[in-house]
Length: 493
Image 1 (cartoon, one colour):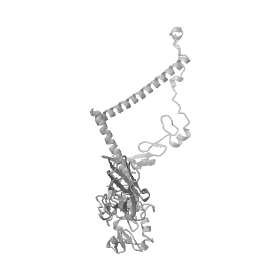
Image 2 (cartoon, rainbow, N blue to C red; image 1 turned 135 degrees about the vertical axis):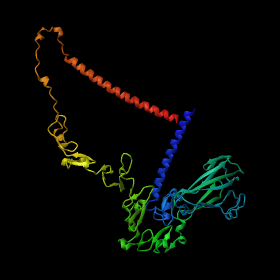
Image 3 (cartoon, rainbow, N blue to C red; image 1 turned 120 degrees about the vertical axis):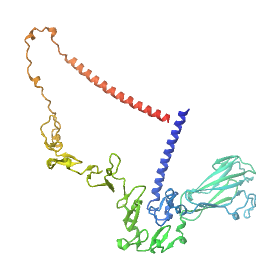
Image 4 (cartoon, rainbow, N blue to C red; image 1 turned 180 degrees about the vertical axis):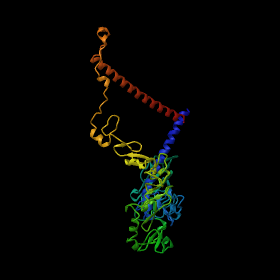
């Protein structure tokens, strides 16, 4: 019983890790939207990129102001409040209780509330509770059915839940209704997208009842800090040359930079956008790759970004972009990583600083590699035609027995077959024995016929084939045993 349980636990853990990885990927995709060129222009444009994008208004911020909400949970408390908070308001002065005679229609009120006011941020959900009393309508009605105006076209989403005969029904219909029944239902309202315009209006009614309830939704797609009364003109944070809006300076004409500290004419540009472009690899990228600040057209990279030192003209390099040795040490622990290339300490060389630059091991008789090669990593790399520890031995390019040809010679002789050594004893004529004439026919060993020779060769080939097959079978069995062992370990866990 325990093994299946453990197996289920392993499956559950694997599923959790998979979901976590998918969630992480989704967050990264959202962050790209938040940190787009459009999203970084203003708080209002930031929150329109995605419901999870928030804006940080801290004046000394050194990372992109628009980011996923999880990025600012601890570092920037102001981010969550910039777009305001979603809220529901049902004022008593605009609503009447059930069975009350409505002053305009002179009919009994069958649904309450009649009006609800919502302030709604993208991605948030507000739940509005309604109560309906069924009275005998002019036409026969057997089922309770909710109807709405077109909410999708105005960027709203509304989903309903109904308390239907002691059960919760997700949807718009509760089957079987009679006069006097009181039904509670709930509208879950979301703002799916920000569109131009002011408040949004939607109506909710019940089939057979002539009056409707109204939902008035104010989208919180703009930021409170962008309102004129919250802007600070000629603020000291902008060197008295701009207006501080949501923690970001909007500079006066002729000035640019994060704090309006840059005279545009001095840097040969005519707008703050041109100045920022000097800190971008291309106009559609964020300044300094989002890993530094643009100061008058030059990137100042963050000293530490996610534990790595950032480098490069556009802060495009980190301290992990250099080669490592077999122990995993950057630049073999003998240099510093500079934008993807190792700068080695004195006495070391090579892409990963893994080689000693000391040429003493290559020196013999006062010469480096006998002047027939170069010293690389403490060893001689010889020119063609030379060999030996110090390249002091000349190779005979025509000597092929046991000798390797250099690359050029090999290309010229690659279709030749190296001659085999000739057995001198085999070339000597056979000496006749004086007693050879006395041998009987039975004593003479008859060589095998051609057919027998071929059969012998076939037998040898079959034996070789059987041996190879046996080796392959042993390898396959070893793999199967390994897989079974791994499965047993998983079941035991």
